[in-house]
Length: 386
Figure (tube, rainbow, N blue to C red):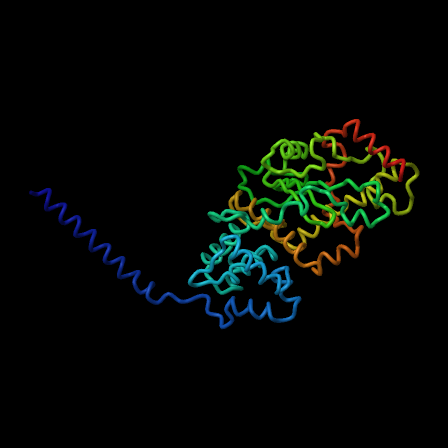
């Protein structure tokens, strides 16, 4: 009896304490001051950017207004991106592209679009899922655009066919392969295996691009410390990765044409002194043709600033962000041949961004298994013809 009375008094005291707390918090909840109160909402700013001077849209979203609307429609119709009761597909895509383009924080995007941080995060991940194929029942945009235009490789690339420096010597080439290091945001305890050549955490990303500067294959997620050979061998020995191969039935490293080692190679080395023998002539042509992938990496990193300072996403999300930037870059290239950034690069064809010359190009200088006897013979024949 006495114990029951004690329990009753104890429950009554707890109830009184909870009521007191509720009374204290209630005014705070009732009179919480609104934060995002700008008269120019994010959607209004977007509409103004899309309908204003063309450069404004390119600066904010890295593509023309027409292409922006086309992308929104494609993501909605083919890849499962949906609007909600509070935010449209167009604004979701705008939030996503703005974040990738400028590499800004959730707080900065929240201020720009006058939305809560939670809404910004949800919109960002909705678009990311539609591009990377995480939406249930839908293929991602990346699957449609990171692949060869002609998977049979029957046609000679126009870049080779219409240039006497490469035709007919390289008429059977289907693309270029190289790696690049992209910033990673990793907890301190796990950073060691991600520290690349420059001592900072990175992802080692291997890619293949065609001669139209479109990526046809990428391998994303390897730690910065991973050796390029390991990444390469894993890609070509894993059938599910669909690594593009030049000729059916030819095993690797057959089909992979490397330059001569210990011979001048980069274009800058030939600025004042012309090739003096067949090997140097071959290396000069090889370097010139292969520069398209270095320029492609340069365009990628200049277009999407997020790759230079990755936010504190989970490792899986960071990998998806990298994949999305590659996919969107191809999307722009294949749907807008008048794109400003690509046109500048094409007008200065031999110009390679400095960051892509610093430590890159390992796939051409011995980190991958030396060419087979058959490929060495092909290389010698091309060198003699040049």
